[in-house]
Amino acid sequence: MKQPQASYRLLGVDPGTNILGFAILEVSKSKLSVPELGVIRLQQFQDHHQKLRHIHERLQGIIRSFQPEVMAIEAPFFGKNVQSMLKLGRAQGVAIAAAITMDLSVFEYAPRKIKQSVTGKGNATKEQVAAMLEQILQLRLDQHTLDATDALAAALCHHYNQNSILGTGRRYKDWSDYVKNQK
Image 1 (spheres, rainbow, N blue to C red):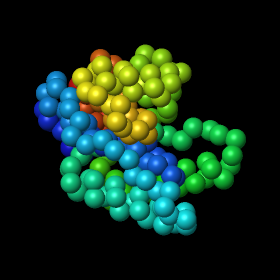
Image 2: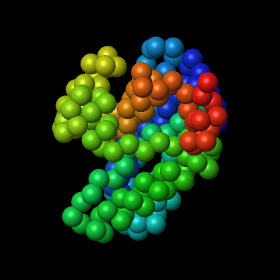
Image 3: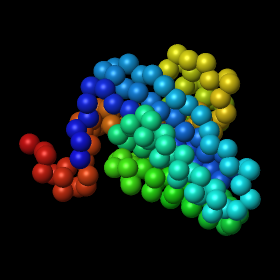
Image 4: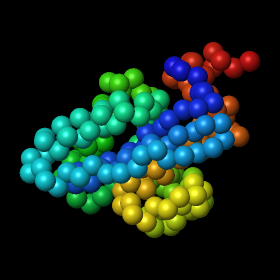
C-alpha cells in the first residue's frame, strides 16, 4: 500500500440511487482544498441496472480525471424500507467496485462517525454539517446539494481519522501489516 504523501487527493462519496454525491478533497501539507464537488443525477434512468452502470462509469471518469489515492464512502444507514436499503446497498457496492478496480484504497464510515468528525455531534443535521464544512474549508457551499456536502464530509472524516493523534497517519492494508510496521 502507498505511503501518505505531503500532497494527495481523496474521493468522498455519498451513495444514492437518485442522487449520488461526490467530492475531491486535496491535502497539500496542512492545507485543504476542494478542486471538485458535485452530484451524479440518476432520476432520468428508469431501470435500476442503468443507474448502477452510470454510477460506475461516472465515478471511474472522476477517478481518472482527479487521480485520488483513497475513497471514503458513507455506509448505508438502517431504514424501514427493505427495497430502498437493497438498492442503496447496490449503489454503494458499485461505487466501491469502481474505486477498487482503479486501485484506490476504500474506507467506509458510518453517517454518525462522519457527522461527529466534522461537527463534533453525531446527530448533527445535514445543514449543520454543510455549515461546518464552510467554516473549516473557508468556501461557500450554498450552491451545492447536501448530497455533495455529505460526500465532502466523508472525505474530511477520513482525512481527520488518518491524521488522528491516536494513529500514526499511516495506512495499513490489514492488521498483520500494522503489527509488522510497529517498532
